[in-house]
Length: 149
Image 1 (cartoon, helix red, strand yellow):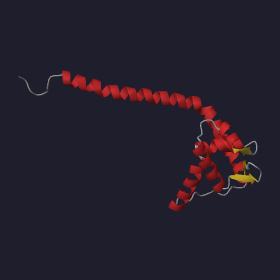
Image 2 (image 1 turned 180 degrees about the vertical axis):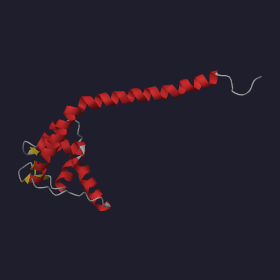
Image 3 (image 1 turned 45 degrees about the horizontal axis):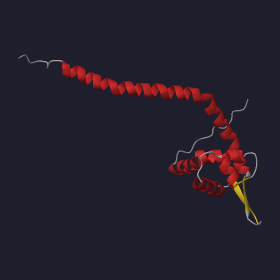
Image 4 (image 1 turned 120 degrees about the horizontal axis):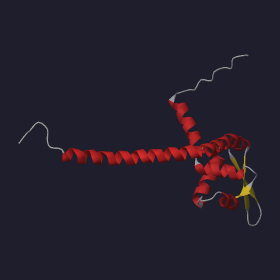
């Protein structure tokens, strides 16, 4: 069996910034929702807005412009009256569906563990805020050390 070449991650500041910029785009919740909505084919603006629950008109506009700018979505204007605009995933945008689907499946599978971890964390936080108060009260109730009246 031949050894696969090891891929070295470039830790340079410039590379990290470029990756962070890309992750900021594809990791944004509205991007994920819009790409998911477009996975079945082209949609008009209002169709996307109906599918993506909770997105504001402004946020949808900004998200679509960013996705178009990054080459993930193609905007097609049809010269009809009134004008019709469709949005569709590009080939690059369709490639994004695979990792997003894997991330979705991971989130669904691990959601119970995350909910449990959050509850345990909240419980620990509540206990740690109560404990210092109890310790202060115990200390105040004790007589001072080293001095006798």
